[in-house]
Length: 604
Image (cartoon, rainbow, N blue to C red; front, side):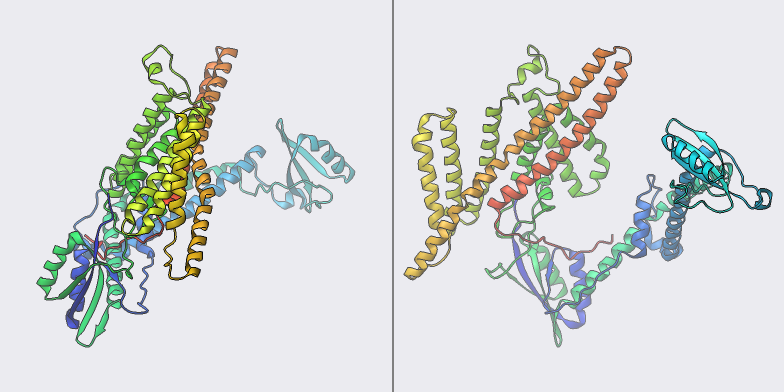
């Protein structure tokens, strides 16, 4: 995986053929256009009704066979009528859903009062019924107030918690008189409310069935939206060219691998083209070469940052490091196996796009690494295998050995940051600045060597000689080569020395970044401990009651491990990616780039 090399291309053509040439370039689909006017006209395409209709159809769980022969069916289809019909279906569905929700809430309020119908006011001598729901503890106070003011009332229903009281009065009693909230039950009987709810449910089913029938137009809507986006892109490209009398000029970036195709296009259309290498003043976009196997690392990192064109692509490193971090945070073989099963069940949606396939491969690799790590630490849903068994013999890492796990986390962190600095040095190998990141890599490795020598993990010479020597040499490189300030006077020399001291001060940041990798051990241990806690709770319940304990123990295990699994997934993704995006990228990528956006057609 690498960043693809680009050439700047400048095309000259006759103005009267401008539209045709731009359409050809759009069909070719390999140029990232550079606006040549100072204020190019921005053409923004709003999603519009067609996009809203398409989104509504895509939410249908069942899809009909698609109408694909667009050219023959477009006059029959009457796309605008279809869009309006879909949006009308959506509007009616929302309306009926609101009615259903209100009816359900009304029925919940009315049901405790039972089936009733209000008599005419003349039959009650213009007296009205006022409904109150209050706690049983407040009933005595309510009775005293009603007796004091000689108001007729009746206790209609009582539960273990609440009392349902009806007060008879020609006007609503004042809140100061009865300081309890009134229940608004309405005048529609319970039986009629239930009938209306059934009618709303039937209407919703009919509308969902109609939506499923309309899904056959999904492909057609997609093509209409694509055509509109293509038209907008073409208009924006037209506004971004430089026009000079009879000729026009268009400029862009093209991958070197596509240069032959562009040359063939220019020859076929009689267009002059000049190819140039990017200059120091140019800021080309970044086009990543993403293989199907490990390209998921670049996709995952791309959610947060795009590397600069002149930097390096950390996608491969992220692919492996993120998988390792995720595995260490999950710290359970069965959790990772369940994660792989979820990805397998979602493979249909993931296979619909190239990016989805790459992310699926990343997910599978993360699961495999997680299972291996889980076997090595001996954790299966928080349970450890027997020591004499085959799985017990494979478990050679003790997660509860705090010293060993701290050392492992720090070594992984230092290695990760050393790789970032070495790659930065490789990218800048033509400049003396390359020695600065090499100095940081040496300094970090030297500090780790001193610590491991002090703890007895490495020979004492690493503590007394090798480690200090590496740190001194690394610090010297950082001090001398972190600044690119030219020295032409004594003042420049002083300023460069100050730049070096400022760079050395970043050693505190390096120390903090290395310690950040301790979260791998902490989160892995917390997840494993929580799994063991749920197992222990379930066993206690089972032992306390062998009959009903089976049910409650099963509920504890199910809910507990689902909760812990969700927390581990969240921690593994968030903190695993954080270490790559913040700590790793901070040392490996100095400048952020912007992605290559091809001027291409979306419509089939």
